[in-house]
Image 1 (cartoon, rainbow, N blue to C red):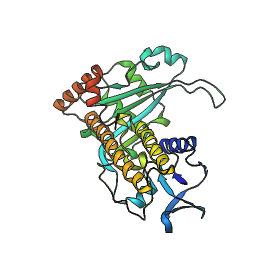
Image 2 (image 1 turned 180 degrees about the vertical axis):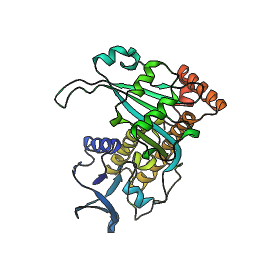
Image 3 (image 1 turned 120 degrees about the vertical axis):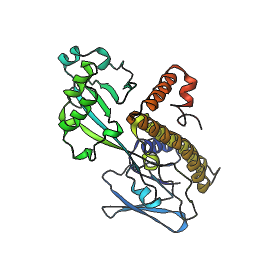
Image 4 (image 1 turned 45 degrees about the horizontal axis):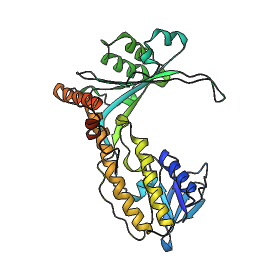
Length: 323
């Protein structure tokens, strides 16, 4: 059994490594290739074509080519991302010795629990990224922040705004907050300030698999790219790789057919991926809401989830763990 994995996302690399370790196939990495399209061949094989006019033929083609997947565009042309009308403004506050000493330790040492969710509108994510000087480059310590713009205040074309305009939107939302938080946003490096327009896949429904489509496409973001608000995208891609590795090894050993592998993988993947996509979308909607009742309810769920592992599994963890 020979497999070609298009793309180098987390899931694709994990899958290639897993298959090679189990000696189910030999992974060959082609660098500098730009995939254009695939073709079905006689006998159920598939040919991948690249922009440099070269091609590779394999038994199975797996699309792990991230959120702008060309494999998905060809295989499932109707599956499109949905605009959520939510904008996140991000920036970095560079840290040196003086700045670090002037900030509370929880903003620089990782002890802050990432998100600040007041009862009213606004949502702010904070995460320090310390680094140490080494062979790969100089010290680059910084604190990352991400401000979710309340939906009623969402700019029409956030990508047309300058870094200073974007920074000012975030500053206006937290103007009465603690001075240390205001400082991190106000003095962000303008070169790092940018908007993220949130998009999400809709709920995945079964798609047709047939005898001419021996193709395990859509792994990770290529299938179910979601908002970053739940922080589970990479974990779900790794889970794809784990599930698919086991199934392909079974096929390699003759315990099941390739078509059964495709059907089983896609059913399992849709089940847990839909839960993760819904969770990330729910959190994004809650973070951008300015409705007091919705915010109070959402804030209460977050408090309960933090205090109870049972509530965590039933809400925040839903669809993320377990088959």
